[in-house]
View (spheres, rainbow, N blue to C red):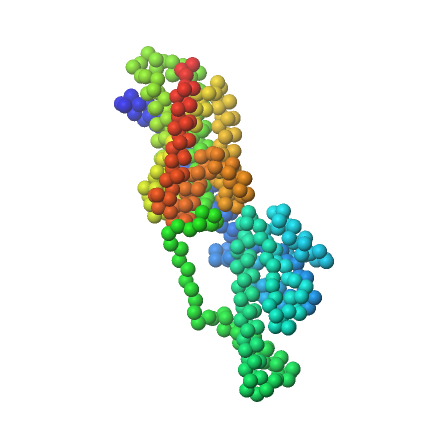
Amino acid sequence: MKRICSIVALNVKVLLSDRSAVFWLLAMPLAFTFVSGIAFSGGGGSDDDAPVRYALTVANMDEGSRGEELLEAIRASDEIDLLMLEGDDADEDARLLVEDGDRSAALIIPSDYSEKLTAQDPAELTFHRNPERMNPLVTRQAVERVVAKLNAEELAERAVVSAHEAVRGTPTAEKELELAQAIRAFVSEELEKPAMTVAVERLGRSARSEMPDMGFQHSSPAMALMFILLNGLALSSMLVTERREKTLSRLLAAPVRRSEIVIANLAWRFAVGTLQLWFLIGFGALVFGVDWGDSMLALALVGAAYVAAVAGLSVLIGSLSRSSRRAETLSMTLSLTMCALGGVWWPLEITPKAYQTVGHLVPTGWAMDAMHNLMSRGYALSGVMPQVLVLLGFAVVFSAAAVAAFRYE
């Protein structure tokens, strides 16, 4: 054990004495976290409280004026941007755009919308959505809020007219219009300051399919995992260099067993990755205001399992590669591929099911799941144990393969 600790301490000291290595370990992850945090927040400009706006495709097939009134009410809500489709087949075009994934959601106003409202019959709007895109829920809720407001105005108008008929007889057309305008103005104003509101506070677990929190809540863990992977696999070339320079061969003359050398290489990579992870966690919490969840033990286990998997893969690449260039090429290729597939650059929740399945063939997919479960969904330790066990499985497989492939020359 003493020999292993000596090798670990020496390698960590050598690495941290390299300024460029420290820059990539600490400074670059922070820069990428900041940039991607701003990008994932959807913000822009100087107003930090400005809401994110989403687009909604609309096919207005209504032959009367009430459809346009609905669209004006949606525009007035100032929550979403309307993308209008024209033509006799606009409703079918909108449906196909959503079905093919070219648009996330579409609102269809039927041709008899005005006619049914005038006859006081129920009118039905159609909302097409593609669950594999990010914003259908947001746009649907915005439309539903407008529809609820218009329903309240319509109901109040009918109630006043009905009451007038019961008390004073059927009003004239002019009087009915006057009553309708007055009651709509009253309801519209009162709905802006409702007597009752509901404060929603999310507690405990939420659905697995729920979109995770974005902004720095996504970018901080994502960039931490990405740079632990990039830097961890980049260290594989050091093993090739040690083999080429006969450093490993000279260890044969020392009382150091093969197993101790492999364990030491795994351990010092694990130590560097762990130091990097907790530096980024602390910086994210203090500077970016990231909430890393309620269980530090769960976060520590997820981080340790992921770093162990990266360390095992790093030693495996170094053991298999015959040149530093080959190790560097393989490390970069695997790192970028795993980041793209594993939900580091964008949440897996917004991708198709097939993509999510492929994303869980690599460690990053499981690690991002665990991070989102802890940080966005309120999971405790038991809720991320499946991800921890899978990551440990990756670590065991990679490390065992590294032991089998390890050679001195």
